[in-house]
Amino acid sequence: MAAGAMWGQAPAARPAPRAGMRFRPVSGLDAAAVERGRTVYESHCAFCHGANAKGGESGPDLIRSVTVLDDEKGDKIGAVVLNGRPDKGMPKFPLPPAQIADIAAFLHQKVFDAAQRSTYQVHNIVTGDAKAGEAYFNGAGKCASCHSPAGDLRGIAAKYDPPTLESRFLMPRVGGFEAMMSGQGPDPRTQTKVTVTLESGQKFTGRLDSIDDFNVSLTTAEGEYHSFARDGDRPKVLVEDPLQTHLDMLTRYTDTEIRNLTAYLVTLK
Image (cartoon, rainbow, N blue to C red):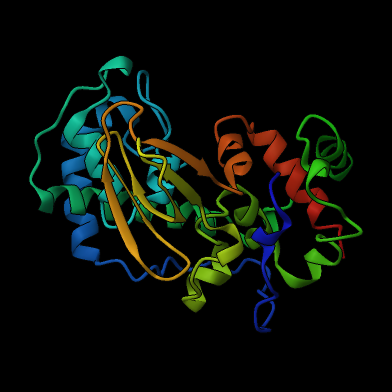
């Protein structure tokens, strides 16, 4: 698990959830766009990625996709849809911008629903083995290399309820239930940085705004925006994401490991 900054500050106190209470999927997305996106997704994407975007016979799980998690209004999803991924067997889909935006809305809704665990009752989420979760934390998961129960995670279970704890380590870029409900922006300590080095040797460093095979853009600490066209490995681009370990783990966790780790984190009061 990556830098302890992902946990941020404790949210404002709110009433504890009642047993059996379900979270309501209020993400602020346009319901009509989500429904249109569902239709387009089912026509063009579901045969590979599954009807629920959780993966199919030939396509990966999009709910845990880093591209989807980092996407804003289709900026990263669109690049993949329009250009395809020939090396992975994905063809190009020349869809208009409006349909790409709708697909993005549908996928973001699916991510939001997963983050809230809206199909699970609160009292059923802590079903794992806390001891096994502790062993995973200190062993195979390598969480202890960045986090400490006596340090950044001290009392974390008193600050967040179980669904929020789980969504925080599964989807740190999203920020978890509390951040979505409060409208809080991303923690600046977890923002991705990028350095672009031109052939002349001139360097530009700042917050990564977007990147794909054709362009990279950033905003410097002084607020200056820069965008560069990419041609293979020119210019040289170095991306530093403090949450990369968490994002990489999305494709490695088993359901059992997730449940056990959640059960362990719940004990850190």
